[in-house]
Length: 142
Image 1 (cartoon, rainbow, N blue to C red):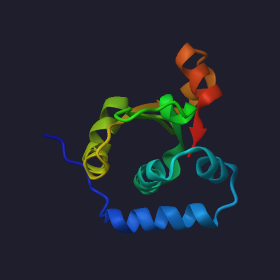
Image 2 (cartoon, helix red, strand yellow):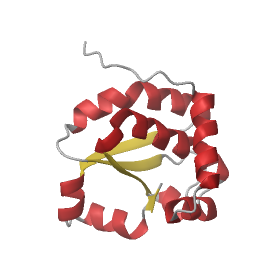
Image 3 (tube, one colour):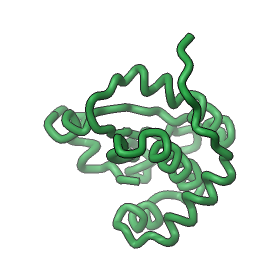
């Protein structure tokens, strides 16, 4: 079994910090998330972003919401699709393993499923697959 150092985190504290940062920020990503995404979903995405920023620090590039939640077409039971972009190098399976305890608890706390896709910045910027074209056109940077 692989063990990773865990970031000591209190979910209530992370949520409060994320909401405060979002309200204080005038960045386009904060404006678009506030104007387009349901407040209940913000309670999931902002703590996730804060956690990822703390975990990856300078390796963290961006968090992008995509799929039905980003398009505003989600229904009850829809999952939350997120792309997590990290500066090179990355091992997608290792990153899934590393973030699973936090994300699993977040899912349990909010009764939803967060589906994560990890990708390197170089791949995100260079690849022209149908998936990435869709994420670039419909995704919301958190």
